[in-house]
Length: 409
Image (cartoon, rainbow, N blue to C red; front, side, top):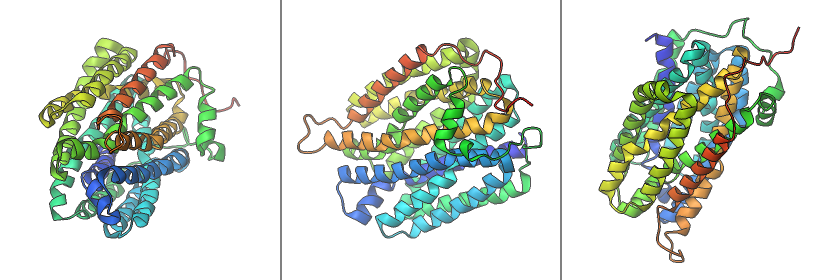
């Protein structure tokens, strides 16, 4: 594998590791700085996550548009350096407000996933795009393997240790990228920077002109809202339901990451070959509905661990949808498309943690109608069912000729 591609995969993996590193310690960290119970800590965790996502939503299109104009290389390397500094600030934060500032900066720098996806689109043939997006998904899965496990282990040294580790990883990859990353944006595909393309509403307005892309963006949004039940609730849910330690939370998320890497890095190709992109999306949604319902009713930590690898089977949805949409836009708009997808994913993360944590707190408190800490997973299953309905009604996209986003000369 070429070194620039390896850097892109490392960048995505470190983004996932940075998230996964701190997930196991967040319940203890928030209770430490605020002195709250598990339900209230989940709500504050949701506020931090939603703030992070809001920044991604606001800055995702801007970062994607800047990468189309100035290149992928400077955007990726600069963001990694700032991200490393942000983790150092969070490592010494003594109040919830400083953690909140850290999440604001972190959300802006994490908006570079659109640039990483655009780089992969730049170097991929049309027929290979979905599979190569699967590699990015596999790298993200590997980040979930190492991140939570390492975070759980480092939690033994205190709630701040994972933040120092995340800072070191981001800084190290920035140095690696400085020496190996080659620029893919040349005069052939370089775009003039326009503010209308660099704001979230402007991106959606531009993409809405492409036939059928609107419904697919809605499907992507609903899937992302449902999927975010894992980072939003998993640590709190397992601590409440099964009294898991941060280390155990880390190992369980690591198992989930291994399974995602296997699915998106290996199984997606035979699945796509047999079912096609559209059939793969349908299969993934059906599997997700079943998994969410099972997690919602499981009563044993052992059975939850058994279900965890099955929860990764629907991970084929994202690369398959990306492949469909990438084929529907012109080559000079790949950064804009991936920026929009990053914004959609971030937009989904704004309400998702708040929704899931509110449902979680409502079903574990003294006034709960019934004790059901798995209730957020039922909500996620319902959202997936709605996404499948929208997708089935969306028609076939990506088979017609590409529409250029540039005006005719």
